Image 1 (cartoon, rainbow, N blue to C red):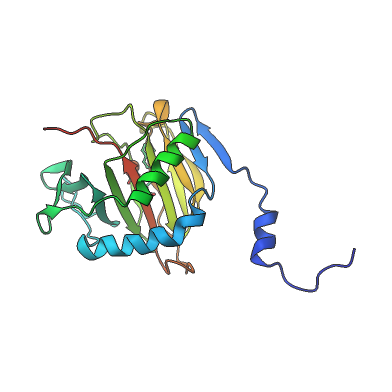
Image 2: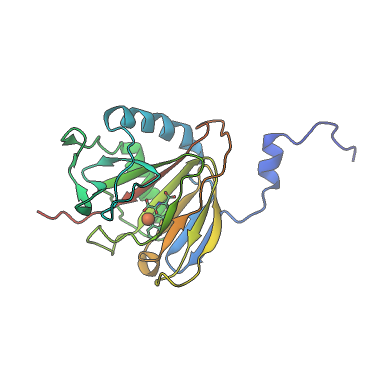
Length: 226
Ligand code: MD3
Ligand code: FE
């Protein structure tokens, strides 16, 4: 067979990617590689619209440190942190208005992702949107402000790749690093729901859709408190 004189095109690279599309990291934790790829560009344009009304901001931890990751929210409830603590609020503290609504396409993606990982009937009411610029990171933590751990969390990675850190149920368990790329979806439920996790500092790069940025969407079901 004559060899091609042309360099590998993007499609050839996709065909050459023999990594499994669905990977169970631990019971309840599943990586769906490229699951959101078909709609990734639409997700990013909707995200820019959301950020016009609820801009990205760096929040203060209760301990007084400034988080490096820019954050905003959409949905009935949004995650915030300040000197008073971590919590979910129905309004954006920057303008006291409701957070922008969860776009129906986002809701559907979250439900479909959870179902693909074995969690039927996931209907999130909160979506935290994280924006990483080179050098920003997220320290090892648990997500435990939702008041309902029976529901999974769905996360969607967009833009530059990052090294995700996947730990255990105790902070002392040393985490594994997993590469997360544009369009990858992770689902965490059951036993995996309260595992420690974080991300390494974002490396410099230029992504064709997002530029020098990584976005992460995390869909959650938060138990209403009133
Ligand atoms: C495992 N975000 O927003 S997403 C977060 O890439 C957060 O922005 C990271 O951790 C990011 O809280 C990681 C993957 C993720 C999200 C939630 C989880 C993993 C999780 C909840 C429980 C266990
Ligand atoms: Fe988290």
